[in-house]
Image (cartoon, rainbow, N blue to C red):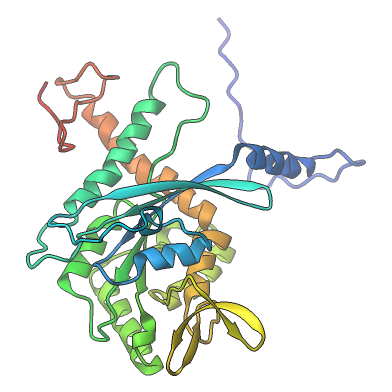
Length: 335
């Protein structure tokens, strides 16, 4: 019996052939654009930080829309919960014909207690539950043509503007979460710091992250080519971004701008001379949104998938798709 032919990879020295005439290969890009505009896409972002750091305002500012949890529940009295509670709201937003299903997950109660030990556990559990949900859909014999994606693509972590150093809570949270999700740290309410204090605080944070081997997004290990590395190196020099959020417009030199009004003047949110919000917006939306999704799928989800499928080789299997069962707390059951 003749062996089946195995497709051969092109040799590394294979050159690019010139075409005799127009073929139309570049039309593929237009096809992809049309298909994406018809189907839309999903983006899931999580915001983590203690109360009063402007998480909801920042999300509204990012998407120039009332998409935060608080904006979706107007008139409700905000009480600090006794434990960390995760609450998600989903909106479909559209710009120039492109639709995006945006899910924002807030974490009220995080860092607000006297004892914040293990307050990251509900967040880790939630992120892993989304991976588990996707995995169970993916391994079905008859699966959906497009699997709903609720996996968290980016986690924006709000650091209090103390001007001193990272707290043990900040370090432990980022150390644990950076292993399973893309963490983007920001200095919240940066207008409470002088420019000198802001720069010194940022350098201390960078030293702390390096000393504790915490790899935040964009991770240096995942730069695919020299151009990516050059761009990401410039971003890494600026992280954590010192940001100010505002969802109200003010008149400045005859123009309407997003900003915060103080007795010293208007802090323009989208003015790079005032804060680094434009850099955060560009990173999350304009330049790295697809990369956030790719790393989530190819790195973080893949690590979870491999671990779970390795677990399925153990004798104790559940009847649910051949994967070990999980109880309500996300732990494996012995059934």
